[in-house]
Amino acid sequence: MSVVFKPDETFRGEFTYSNSVAAIRRFPLPFAEDNYMYSVNIEPHAPGPKGSVTEFAFDVDEHYVAECKERALVLAAEPLRYQALPHMMSSQWDCLELVMESLSHDYPQLFSLERRSNAWHWINRPLGLDQRFTFGDVASLPCEPLDYATRQAQGDFVVMDQRDGDLWAEAGMVTTQADWSMDFDLGMTFREWHGPVPLAHEMQVFDRALKFLLNLRLGAPVRRLNWTMTVHPRLDTSPENYPKWGQDRARVTAKDAGDLVHLRVELQGLWRLPRSNAIVFGIRCYLISVRELATVPKWARRVHRVLKGLHPALVDYKGLTRYRDAVVEWLAPFDDGAPTTPGAGPE
Amino acid sequence: MLITGIKSKPIYAPLRFDEGGRYHLMLGLGVGREPLRRVLDEVRDQQALAVARTEVLYVPAAGDTGKATDQFALPGLAAVCLFGNSNALLEDFRARLGRSLMGTRLYVAGPESFIGMAMKVALDFNLNKDEIRAEECGTLARRVRCIHCRAITEDVKTNIAQCIGCGLWLLVRDHYSRRLAAYMGVMADAEAPGELPEIREVFL
Image (cartoon, rainbow over all chains, first blue to last red; front, side, top):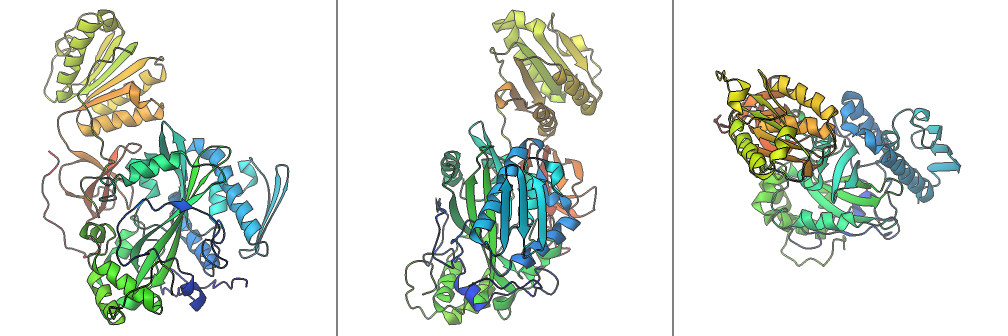
């Protein structure tokens, strides 16, 4: 079954974004149990079941065209949401190759890539792009290679250089983030970059994750899920634009929480890159309204219980303080106390 | 949102002489003179020949009119240069780094914001962290970068400060960028306009 795009849905203004029934069923719920705490929940990024969000390296779903349009809008207003330090050029080409090879291999009806030595020919049918360029020659593309490739992908991308036993966030396309800034964090070490995350440092989560990632092997990508919540299906909840979206958090009531509040799940993938030895960190954002979520009875119970018992430091960090109770109240009628089946699946 | 206790906030250790270095470049501002004097004593006692390969750049505290030889009374130093302000010192520091040799060790002593600016210059020259030492003393006033308009507000002493660029009231977080030599400032009343926490002097 090929994906049907919804090119006109929006992540701002009227917020016309929504999920089809099929998109709800494949939503990557990050809760395998009725409670949640951090863990180093890293697993191999191996192909998942057919039709699932992990079937391919990069999932292209019904929101692809609309998300690329949204990214273009953000970049037009704020070009610095894409940044790369000068020494990252080799890793930029690595990323372009990874994105183009994966998309054209996994979705041949949508994308095609022809390589004759360094003469490459890329076709992106959903976005109507046809680009011939010379691999390694920045001047042969309309913009830098990481910029070019990630304008045509869903999710944010951060490229981390590896040296001195650390990972340095030194390039990135970040327009769909949950309240962190590439512009501010550019050049930071792994621990500095994750500095604002509470509790996890004390749990040695980042020490262990860093140790693991420093040994990440080529051809053996890994993934994990992370989550927060967002009012409206707003992809750009950057700190830069906090003055525009901050007030949304104060407007949620128990009556409209189901429609306003969205579970925001990040499918994070990490790939070692072949030439630069850098690591690219993909942060793909999936949004689902609490009402859409509640169409799956197990998920309604599960999310109700997770939110109700969430650690106060996480409530604060995830910015849920003003509306967590409203969501819990909205979901309460869906939770009859029945046990939930193990695992995150809908059944 | 985590405001304090963020791990990107730099922590500095007391300055010690690095005997492994061949050239020693010391930067100080105001009360940073005392740690530098302490290290100079260590140089003299541990490796007297290194005194002639040690340079000191210093911004005296306001009202301090002492001559260079009064500030650092150690005969035989390669150079002691005094500056009227930190910008002038940093400009000279940049020029010196540009012609510095392998084996140069950097020592910085003074307020955190001064150290941050010196580190930012050192970062431009890819100095290794083993080659830099810094000791924090003096005011805790912060350089704050507005996450919304990117302007830098200097010398912030309060938990909430008005951005010099866009005028928003910014909450000063512990999140620190060495590349920018600044802390992050985020709009304090974005969720409830006009509702500002009490403004207190916290970075003194």
